Length: 630
Image (cartoon, rainbow, N blue to C red):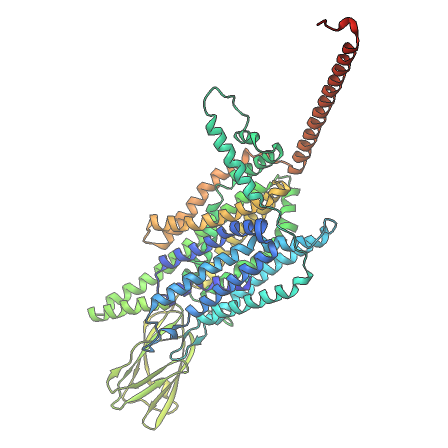
């Protein structure tokens, strides 16, 4: 889990700042990758149940997974193609191709093992070990959220480091390399424990049987579409010519739940944008929390922290309190409220985006009025540059002395600046930075705190005092003010989206499990994961078709779509009748057994009558009076 969520936490920033893609392309590729991660579980379930078994499937696809992570780490090494050693790869096609292959292998690996790992763990317990099995799944869920929490804290820190052979750049290779190494470690540990596991043999894939049965029912119904054939009570009844009635009854129960799944992808459309659009939004905000400086991709840690907090609060306090108030807060009602909370989260995101846009437009207007055309072009370029590098600070030095000076920091060296000349703009981290200014045999130090996304010009006067008053001699012009909107403004939207996730996702899985027959629970699990994939594809479609110029308007559009879908889902939920699959199956089997008994009794009666007829026939043959004369 650390490997997957750690890589995913920095992925959209890797697209934007390393591959140099714009926000829309970075968002599109990100959601395409996430969608593939939730499409491949169907393939993994089929391979495990029909061919390799869960253990071998986990082994083989984890190897594929690890290879993909290694390729991602290699693709982020800028020195591989940086022949001119300016810090920028010269053959970007190589890095893009390698990263796309790596992401495809990761999607195949993580999606393929997704339906196998939890089920394989459950296989280790017998039917009499229900308590131990429940404990295992609790620990399993804790590990998922623990891995997510740790990775979204640590991986952005690794990304923010400076690394490189010839030039120091953001260390995406380390941010991808550590998850790759941990995936290899996880695979080795899993293989070492091979002798301790119970490995069930593949028993055939129920999903294939369900698909074949549904396909036969549709085809048979089409063949008998004329009015001369009697109508069936349910269209699935057309499969009775080939398939057992119990299987058909079980599929009917599953189809009722799958029908309710139709509106669900819209929730995931909004939810998964916290890793793309919301992370990009955080890059234009101030992450200084005093004692702690938060990276934009670290804001995602708010989600797992709130999950670990809200799940027990909901289960032990909120839901019982609602029940005591006499309200029938059914699972489908909870899911409806969860969808509304997600829509509110995006409205909050829109409000935050408006605050960001207003502050930046005011700055741009200020500098447009302040300078001539040359300076307008310069600051416009600078403004875009700061936006592009977001949390980094841009600055330059102008030498007003008659002698050459050298300016350097721990992170950058400006080299020699000629008299009455200026240096190129350079980028450094935000926070306190100390510059060393050297001229002839003298030097002094100048320190200053820099905000997020700011830009400065430092003027070294001809009267510079290299002594202790060096700090006072240098003149500073703040070309662009630091990001004024604070990342703390994102906390409300994270709260609402996480509360929506708890009420929607956790409840939805519980509802699906309770409404499915025992042998069909895997089918509904695959259907649930499929809604996540469709939701990520919807992001691409809406973003491409809408082409809204303002980001806040896009947030409002997604919130409006979810509210509309939520209204439709509430109507569908109102007419849904909750069932007990186990009881229905028991009644159905009892009826089948009764029918079998009736068939047996009829068969016995028929056999008795045949014996009697044979007996009478033999007596007639022995009676001479009844024999026919020749």
